[in-house]
Amino acid sequence: MQSLPRLTQPAALFLDFDGTLVDLADQPELVHVPSELVPLLTALQARFDGALAVVSGRRIVDIDTFLAPLELPAAGEHGARRRDAAGTLFEAEPHDLQRVIDAVLPLAEKHPGLRLERKEAAVALHYRHAPSLEALCRDTLVEVLRNEPALTLLHGKFVFEAKPLGVSKGSAIEAFMREAPFTGRQPVFAGDDVTDEAGFEAVRRLGGLGIKIGLGPTMAQHRCASPAELLSWMTSLLEAH
Ligand SMILES: O=P(O)(O)OC[C@H]1O[C@H](O[C@H]2O[C@H](CO)[C@@H](O)[C@H](O)[C@H]2O)[C@H](O)[C@@H](O)[C@@H]1O
Image (cartoon, rainbow, N blue to C red; front, side, top):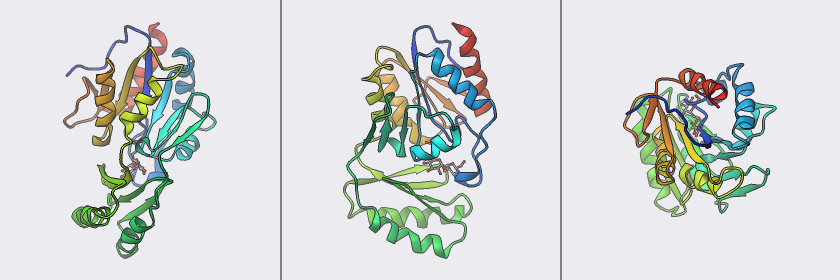
């Protein structure tokens, strides 16, 4: 495993959000966006001729809110939604999430440590403040998803998510790489979670590089310790060429 890479050819940057560009927080809405982040992303977007996108589990609208006034190309909800460089929105086949919500809402209402996050195409059940309920959360979602063949379960950091089958951060990166201004460049993806492995797998397949933030097994070839270290590497890219 190498430390952060030196980019030797024109690159396309794909960046996860939570745990990668910002430190994790107690609640989804409480993340702190460092004051240097938006100016840095703006400068990098210009430096990479527009080939920079956020690839997140969050809704795209939430990414836009955190990064305002920037509206970057973005994939949200683990690849279920994608906004290309021209601003066109692509969505996975809409799926009725009501049965999933009906199954997890009573849990979230009963246990104050649980948190239900409804998105457009996915549902997240957070248990950061009730880690002893991990198995209950997983079992409840596994049970309801038995009758939902179009949905699949993801396990992130203190969160289980029901999301559409057949899309992932990897499929989103592949879609960007077929389009201007990404195509022809070397994809570089930075992420911190198990849910980012599909992205690392995709960039490897496309001859690119993965950067894992933090500990844990990974397919990424590079690693750094924290979002602060990644931001400092990103800043160095502005000086590098
Ligand atoms: O793919 P990402 O951009 O990393 O998004 C993954 C999930 O991030 C959010 O949850 C995580 O971050 C929260 C804030 O730091 C934290 O409180 C929570 O425990 C983490 O799981 C977000 O709420 C989810 O929708 C994203 O899928």
